[in-house]
Length: 184
Image 1: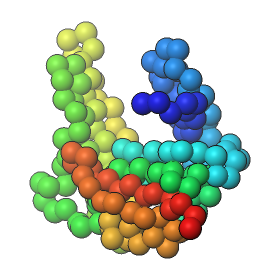
Image 2: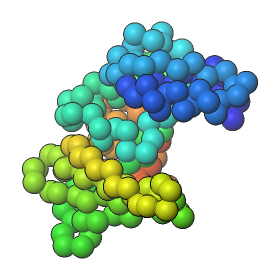
Image 3: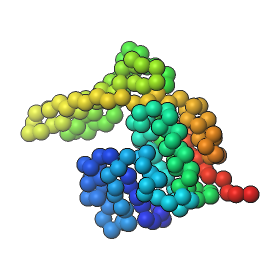
């Protein structure tokens, strides 16, 4: 999309290796590190755009960590630069069968997650992945915590840092775009 170079920061070596397999000749630099260490890898006011998509923000441990990240991102962006966040708003407790979310399905894989609303600020996510291997379906299971971030809270946190925020939707995910204002 014209952004170059691209820095891909993630704590998952396997996801970064998968990205490297698909990047071809594109100028993408992968770094295995915590997103909260962003300021170690970019200089202040040097980045045009930062994307934090697909529920990444809800994997942070606390709202304080989210606010810290927003501050680091704001500092890293050039005036006029943008932060794009997309995530699933899990702030409203789902009940009954609504706690089951189909994630993906094709002829060889079915992915579903089950949400357990057992705490006020977080939700326990249970992933069930069925994969067809040699005409058999194999089940892989995992679980982890995610933050429950109401869109109003995240919007307010972005404004407190200094962003001008625009809200929208990207399929089943909420989208917030924060723009760092130009100096007057």
